Image (tube, rainbow, N blue to C red):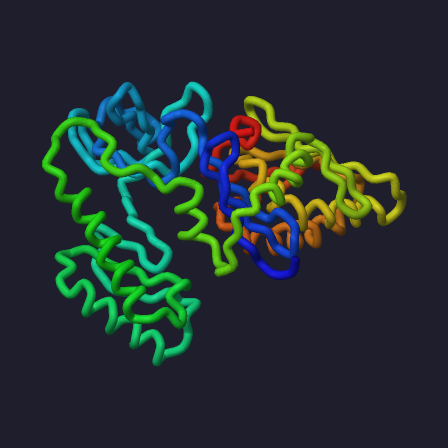
Length: 334
């Protein structure tokens, strides 16, 4: 099937969603089978213990959970604050959180403490931008020091749909912000796989044919990936994820294999839920081709929503990158 299709279903009884592009699995979301807080979960946290030299602080989240807030400047033990989960915690480590809480929906983002009404830069039609701003002002006229961002999905949206989304998202945000409690507590669960797919994936064609997805999941249980002239292996360890690139071709074959990896790697990292430190052991290629490889990898990552930083080359010729741990590893979920 050509085009983009969103498939909603369940994997082992848990909500799951897949994005197919031209019949090929492009992104995958599967809920865990436990109560670990997902991305976007909001807590009222209690500051616990600062860590000298790192500028961060451990915070209590309630029910025995501990969070790690990287920017603790001005905070004191015992102080309460709202925090939001920003990523998946490695085993035995605290849950990463931020105090820059955002309330996201498909069409808008509510920004507590950051006033303003803004439209996504990708929407360039001045007339439509003015129309969207007018709808938002009518829907939420009194914003009391908070802000709203209208997302790219607002393009061409009808007034009723946008108004409903704005008022609902604003209402949820105000309910959390006005909560009168004082103890560490979970105030809002992050979206499940179905809600996250609706919120963040473009596309209007929805299917429930999950069997189509299951047929492509088996390949993700193997570390081996074959693309063009390249065969590469993606193998997570406790400290990092190693990617080993091989090719049977000589001469320029190494460079071609590395370019194939660059184009495919973002998709594989998305599908496998891999984050943290990633080290690429590339196929042999001349040093003069390194910049072209970096450019190809940077281009491929532009369409990937998860923050990834290219670190550079090691003395041994490995290439390093880091990726935000927004998702749980797929091997845990399958």
